[in-house]
Length: 125
Image (cartoon, rainbow, N blue to C red; front, side, top):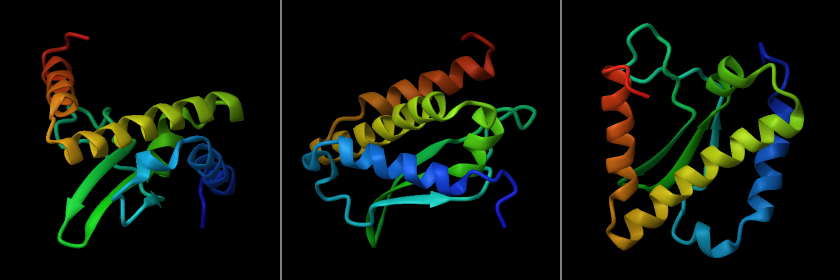
């Protein structure tokens, strides 16, 4: 059961965004984009106040992006469709950049994410 009542809308948003992005960005993303219904809290969260909206993952089966619907609803559940789509787009593009960097051997975004967590822990953002 969907406690937020927006899973179909959320899925439609991701499908719309997928259609907007050129195919080459999805090259070698063999496990695709997965919507997880859970709320995912970052392990470094101080008071369960840092939600993970999306993750790029590589494992023995391949490469995938997980988008956490529950985390989006906890963070942006009061947003209208257009504003929610904007936030989902930001997250999807962020995770696709992780994918593209992994394919090319770069880690600039990993370093940027680590810096964000460091600043979060030190309250400097």
